[in-house]
Image (cartoon, rainbow, N blue to C red; front, side, top):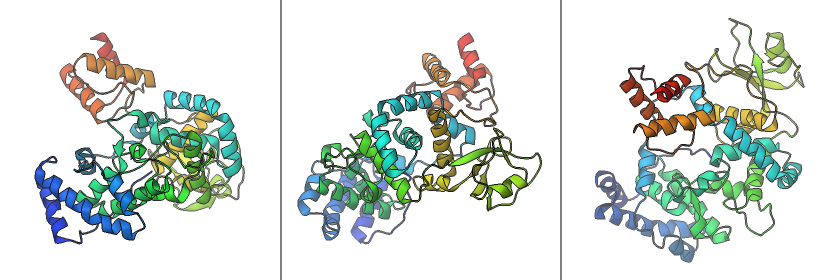
Length: 408
């Protein structure tokens, strides 16, 4: 789930002083640890006033004596630039994510049948969310990524001014999850910012939407795929998902024509010259839709209807909702984009991107995982190779770069 930044001054002079020391001293210093332990001790009263038992609080923090330096590093990280549309979508909607999604659709069909019947949410949307949030649960197996949720949120509540209010609220919610018995302390893991389980729910959202779909008495989004997918479906349904309807339509735009902003009926858009790329008519001309062009006029365009905005209640970003919709359509077998993203290079397949990483590693430029995802490490490696080979240093995972690596 997306994290909403929140800023709040510390209410105690001592806590503020401890924060200053924590930011100035090395993460493992005695000063920083003492400040964190003091914060944990003082926050206990706040948690108890909020309905968390003292025994649960003490047990949750047993063995936690210092802030998590990985969480602080992640919290400080600020991307230097906004990635272009193709970069975002290529890392999320690709042949591997589609193939695994189709495997999961077959494997979990009986449960997906029940979830779809109960909540009215398209199964392929749920599978796409599962892929986007945790790579079908693979991310939960990575110890270097998964963090102790209590420690993570306490770290942010203690040492991150921007996220302090958010983190404290989420920490109390996480403690109440432990208190209810849905999961035990050893399995209460999540992202650095506290997003949990296969479908990455922050604790307050878990409290609002978590479902015990498999009937074992626990709402276990960490270990139960039915619970995790049903919880996602419950969120979408309660936020207005319209059963039996799509999320949007890929459309063609007349060359050179400008379009007014805002929502119009599909019939009105059609009258302005906007048509479906597959030539089919819109299902309901009276339905309201909004025009979205995530990558600019050179890339695909979409008319988004109600369910698109419902997906954004999961993560309030246009790119996220578009990626979920596109991936869902491909898993369902409807095919991909007609008008692809406008890239300044020749696109690689998922396996070719893995090969690119492997070859960069062989030449000593890359030391990350061969996961086909082109993040900052992969881009830096590509640029280092491009510099050595006398190529333009753009960091793009292109067929041109792969061919150079193969030849050399």
